[in-house]
Length: 75
Image (spheres, rainbow, N blue to C red):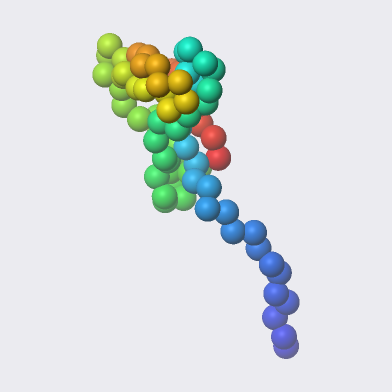
């Protein structure tokens, strides 16, 4: 019996945690989600300090302080 070959699409894009710039509204990557299946299915937001985390927008170079609840998950 011959196995049926089904082409599969391979994607190099990883799931990511994203932030939106408060100045220019450009979405940028905060960090990648882990590479294990459980990380992908049940992602946990990265920890932030209570006062927030300062990040620089790669588009407009404006620095902003972000809170953990501003993270968005994208597969």
